[in-house]
Image (tube, rainbow, N blue to C red; front, side, top):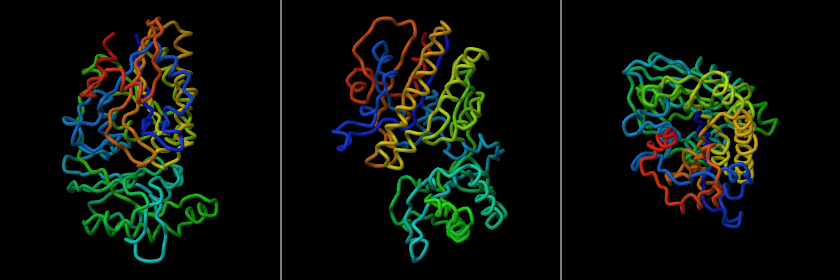
Length: 400
């Protein structure tokens, strides 16, 4: 038996008036998910424990079977594991986004955040900008590390954990009320704006109609995590397939292997087929028992407030990832169980994560009898299957 989780990040949402009161999941054409749902169990699961922020960090830990109340030490340290930063126990890691500010006349604090991802800037361009900032701003006790696309790190030696607001939570708002009180962090952010706004890469981006990556934004602080071994917990040899450092870092902390897929970038135009093929090869040829396939695109489109593009992202997950996996496994005659779900909702109306329960679909290839299910938030909520402790849901996947 092989086991698969297909995590469609932020896929769930809320009804949208322009879609006739449907969610993006309901509006998307997902024939493969719906065909599986007729033979599957559907239900809902609370992936974010009460009282914790609904982030991809806490939620994906739950999906992986790690109770966030026990294992969560912050988002950025998980990304540091992926990048290969050897954190000391007294180090504090901060996520360092490259964001787009408005560039209006006036003080730095009067600007507004237009885009938390700087138009999904390429990793290559982002590294040039981070290296520029590093040369100008790095000082004793503080170190910058380049990550993927707009997602980077700042390590504060013998630092402290400060609660800083995620940029995607304050889009279009004046930033003054959300800046760090810490003078070093605030100075670095202000100076980054002066360094970056007229950088040649950003001049070129404006000429191309793209959002400039014109400021740093710090958030997501935490200390070095210590996750229990996934293989020891589950008895399964697992592999992670993701384009983002957060998921790769969880895998590193859990002792799982990471597979990097060329062209996988965490955006709408990622290499969907490459991710599917990597999972199939890992499970059918390379001896892995479990594959976790993470697709970031629906979440990114939700943050951007792009209804049509979020629908497209969900449809791509269905037609370009799920179909490819199902076709390969059905041709192989290998028995398998696959779970499809988001980690959290990212509704278009709020453009950030929310803590509602997520819909899941659990399909077993040995099931032959057709039912009446289709897969979306409303149908899952009506099913009667509810997992209050979402981190236990993976145990249900592994029951057979």
